[in-house]
Structures are given as C-alpha cells and as structure tokens.
Image (tube, rainbow, N blue to C red; front, side, top):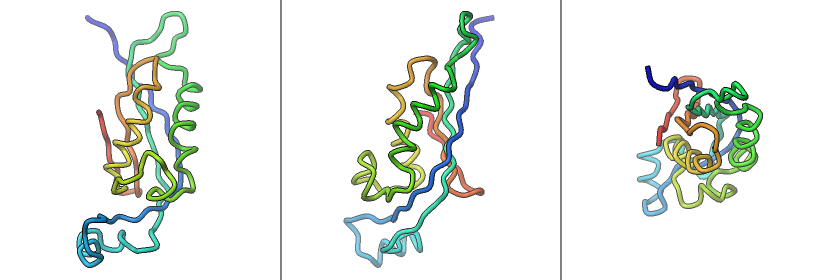
Length: 138
C-alpha cells in the first residue's frame, strides 16, 4: 500500500494594498484592462493565505511538520513582509510584478519553497475576497 501522505494546512491573514497596472501601457489601457483595480491611489484587501505541506508522518514526533514551525516560516517570510504594506512599493519580492492574486500566490510560493524542510510545499492558496481564491501548486 505505499507511503501514506498527509496534508497539513496553515491559515494566516494579512492586509495589503496594491495597484494593478502595467508600466508599458497607457493609463487608459490600464483602466480598460484592470478597471477600478488600476486606481492611481491603489486599493486594498484583507487576504487569507493557506499554505499546505504534504508528507509522511514522522513516527518519532507524529508530525509531518510542526505547525509552530510552519507558522514561523510563513510569518517571517511572507506575512511580516506583506501585512499593511503596499505590494507595488514596499515588498521586495513583489517589485516589478503586477500584483494580481495569481502573481501573489506564485511569489509567496517562491518565498516558502526552500524554507520548508519537513514535508514538501504542496500548495499556496490566496483568498482575495470571500468569493475569489487562487491556488498555486508549483
């Protein structure tokens, strides 16, 4: 019956502002493509982030990954850098990236992938609103 896989998910919440725009386009084209999300002063969201790790349960600890450690990794590498920040201007790993939820999920994955040593990063899910979420599985 092969190794059993178990999925561990940690949920975090952060607030951030951003403006969707492509520097190569005119203001008119940005507004046409991104609508009110291209407001020159930006807008914000209360994001919900779910990070899932997959692995086998360690027989000595009973863990795939210690959730306290997962929390620390997510907070230090993502939440502390993004919470109450402008994603276009204040977050180093978002520089020169259009901060769509799709790109945010990919960039968060990149921040976490090599930091998780117990289990393997399985997915990053970002809820931009209660109706929209975006999931990246590397």
